[in-house]
Amino acid sequence: MSHPSSPLAIEGIVPVLPAPFNPDETLDLDSVPKLIQFCVDTGVSAVCLPAYSTEFYKLSIDERYALVQAAVEASSGRIPVIGQSNHVSAKLAAEIAVKNAELGVSVISIAMPRLFALPDDDHFAFLSEVIGATSLPVLVQDFNPGGPTVSPAFVKRLHDAHQNFRYLKLEEPLMGPKVEAILEATQGAVGVLEDWGGMFLLEGVSAGCCGAMPGLGLADLQ
Image (cartoon, rainbow, N blue to C red; front, top):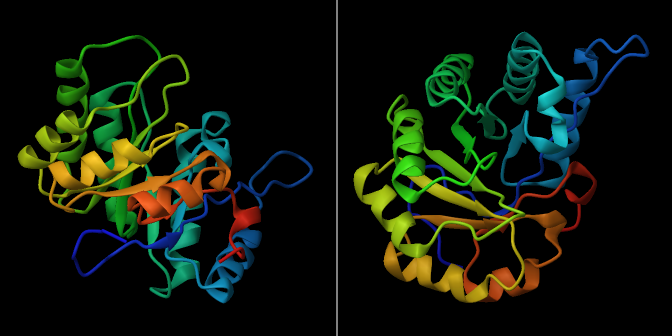
């Protein structure tokens, strides 16, 4: 598999952790160490939260930070924690990324704003503000059910401008040729991860994907 050469090389299954809740809908932070231990025991490459499978959009910003902090503390350096820093505002997404870095995550993840159709230059400006706010490795997630995802040329442009942009999470079928083109354009400096619950993992691995980011239920299928 082609993947970036760095002290932190993500390769394999990277589950997105769910948000555990109590019956009164408050966060069950006491269950987070159990989730982390399961991930450690199954030997996954890293964990990510609070992302879509965490249902981050149902959480307050303080609840998101509480989950990240609980995961970092529970991992105790045994497994990298990827801090999802989503917001449709670049300014606020950057602030979330900075806070997640302060909480001790190993990687920052940011989803591209696909609420409206935007030109590449706008997406570039959005991501640049977030990526530029941290020195940590950054993973960009692109899920665009209403249209195409980023092109290899865009990925190269972004990496050329920001060397800490190290990973790309794509969610689309038949993406093998695009994965190969991205790896060629960036000379393997940007690792590509497959999503959609691992549905296209075999295709992705043969094309050079460095891993997949399914829900926690697939973490032990290694």
